[in-house]
Image 1: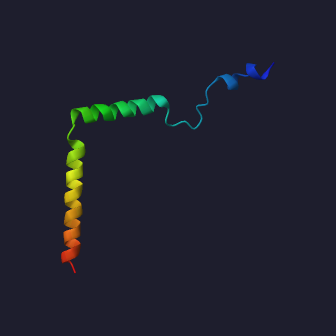
Image 2: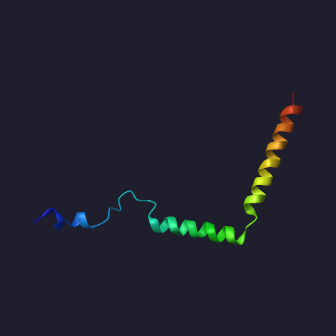
Image 3: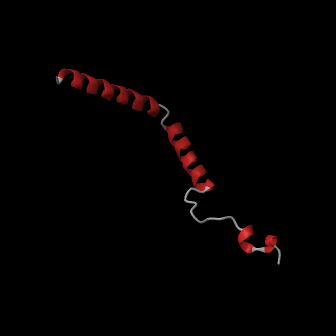
Length: 64
């Protein structure tokens, strides 16, 4: 029996692989579909974040 005949050498190791390529591609497809349905979402998040930062800076300036 040679080293190439061993069963564990032929099978892929699944131990510890929580993120298999299939789950990564499913997650990637989910986000691609989500952003295709909601194309303005990144802009809205950016604008809301900028407004929150400006409000926090104004609150910090006037709280002194």
